[in-house]
Amino acid sequence: MPEHRPELDPTDRRVIDELQGGFPLSPEPYAAVADKLGISEQDLLQRLERLLSERTLTRFGPMYQIERIGGAFTLAALAVPEERFEEVTAAVNALPQVAHNYRREHALNMWFVLATETPAGIIEAIARIEQATGLKVRNFPKEREYFVEMKLPVRA
Image (cartoon, rainbow, N blue to C red; front, side):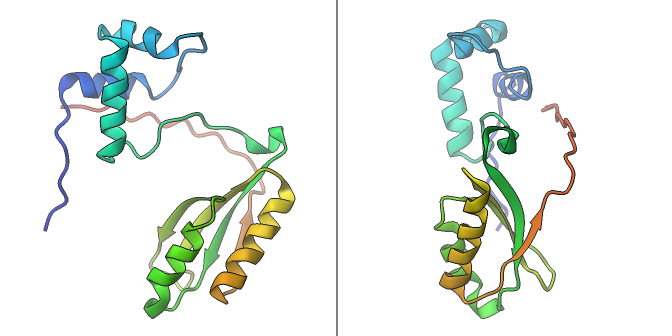
C-alpha cells in the first residue's frame, strides 16, 4: 500500500522554502517570518505543527556544532540479527542520546547518531546499548568537519 503523502498548498511550500535557512535572531522570530510570508504568526505556527505531525517535516530546529559547547556526537553501528531487529531498535531508541536511527542493507545493519552533553557521555551511551542488547557497538567518531549547505526548494 503506498504511503499517504499530505498535500502541500502554495503557502506550505513557501513556509518550507523560507525556513531552510536564515531564521531570524530576534525577540519574535516567528512573527518576522510570518510577516515576510504575508501570513499571521498563528497561521505559521499552526502550519509548522501540522507539517511536523504529518511527518512532512521530520525536524525543525537549529543545527549546532555541539563540540564547541562541550558536547559530543558520533555515528555508531550494530550488526543486529534479523530476528532481534525490532527488539534492538526499541532498546537503542529508548536512550535520549540517540538522535537518529537508520536501517541499512549491510552486515552493520543498524546505524545511529549519538549526541551527548559531554564526550564521556558517548562512552556511557555505548556501554548502555551494549549492556541492553548484548551486541558490540561500532563507534565511528567524526575525524573532520565538513559543511554542506543543502536547500531543497519545494516546487508544485
